[in-house]
Amino acid sequence: MSSEHIYDFSILPLPRIHFGAGKLSQLTPSVLAYGRNLLLVTGRNTLQRSGAASGLPEELRRNGIEAVRLEVTGEPSPGLIDRAVELGRQRPFDAVAAVGGGSVLDAGKAISAMLPQREPVERFIEGRPGALPHDGRKTPFIAVPTTSGTGSEVTNNSVISRVGPGGFKRSLRHPAFVPDVAIIDPELMLTLPRQVTVSTGMDALTQLLESYLSPFASAYTDALCCSGLEHFSCSFEAACGEGAGSVAVRAGMAYAALMSGIALANAGLGIVHGFASSVGGLFDIPHGTLCATLLAEATRENIRQLRASDDGAAGLTKFANAAGILTGESFGSEAEACARLVAKLEAWQEQFAFPRLGEFGLGEEAFEEIIAATRSKSNATPLDAAAMRRILAARV
Image (cartoon, rainbow, N blue to C red):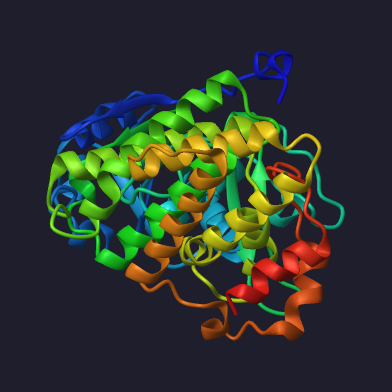
């Protein structure tokens, strides 16, 4: 990447961000800034699981906020969004607040974006036949993540999926869809199950690495990615083990996820997320799990292709720098650092037993359809069909 390119960039707007333990207290005044009629989107067990959020419905009532609650399970589908929008037409909402993981936040973001519209959401989803441009009108949206993964609290897109034959996993996107307020409270993450911590954490790591290596990266996004990688390296294993109940550890993971969200919104993502879109429409594989199982092999393939490229030096330097951040080690050569990065990712793959694609019914017979549908313009380097096949085949 040339020095001219790294200093040539545009930045999407950011929400008003409240970050830190106890910041959930900012939800009520944030809602009241827009009115008293609220659509509260949560996961099925979000409020019950988190002691910090369990009293939220009562607090809202006590402050005169009339909240209608919508529970989301799994990744949002067009049908879920359309049904929620119909509810809003019967009872207008002043704001939408989503409290939950990435799928909950994506659902809330899409509902916010569609409440002022008259067409079904599928008419506005990228890559769908006859897709319409969205005009950017929305109901004010407040994002409160309870996992450290997608960074959806600061991005301008909502991932909508329909799984099965002819399925898809695509984004509803507009710069105006960046949440108006983001409240990141690590106390909400203290009770996350270990496997959720692992998979969402690996999603954040994938986003940091892919944004860092993106040809659309800049000095701004590089700084975010390196800062996020540093906090991830200090927090991930602790959050998945004895530090799971530590607010400081959870704050480190939440910060890494936040940085990954800002970075991806401004630099884009690579081949792993390209597969997440194509595979996610055909097979019911949790997004974080897919990222976790493909990241090491995708990194190996990217390094291989960069070495064979005439202009791969900058990318290899970045991979080597990421290796130093994630391992805390110094290396005698760039090649040694890159090898150590792949080894570190493979060690996590083994330590946390990331499932293989075959466990979800994905076999080689689906490769051609997946590869044909996979797009990764923001990948570290162009990958042909043979390279993509190697990545998939290594994890079946």
